[in-house]
Length: 140
Ligand SMILES: N[C@@H](CCC(=O)N[C@@H](CS)C(=O)NCC(=O)O)C(=O)O
Image (cartoon, rainbow, N blue to C red; front, side):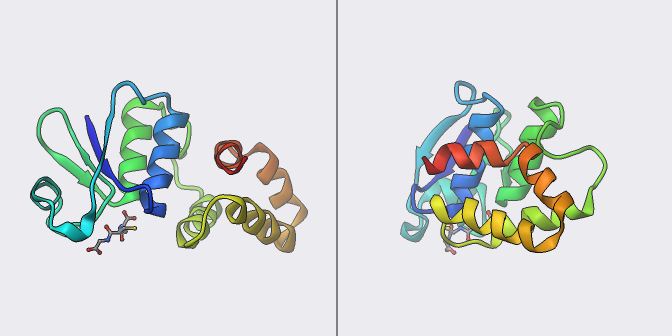
């Protein structure tokens, strides 16, 4: 598989965290693309011309960061990152992460702040979340 991405894209970064967390780095070749240069391969696999875009081994393609992550998790991760049944609070928290434009240190602080405001249980979830260790690792 081949992942078209850009270092500057928070959406692509999120997918790359998932690739790393699922230990798929050797199976997915990561290729930098500037989405604003009308790259032929990108437009061919994603008519929207946006990254990230995952090109499958059979030539098909999957795009939109969340769809890519859900695909990788279901196909190769035994649904470790996203549960098989929808947890709406988890989905909402995930949307919060997606909505953040700035990553690195801010993502962890913002998420923690948001959980602290909600409920003590959220803090427990924060500690046990499968995502946070990966994000925290990227912020160091
Ligand atoms: N909903 C998409 C958004 C992807 C997106 O907007 N990517 C930006 C880079 S951060 C892009 O490719 N922009 C190029 C364009 O809009 O033409 C996702 O989650 O993957």
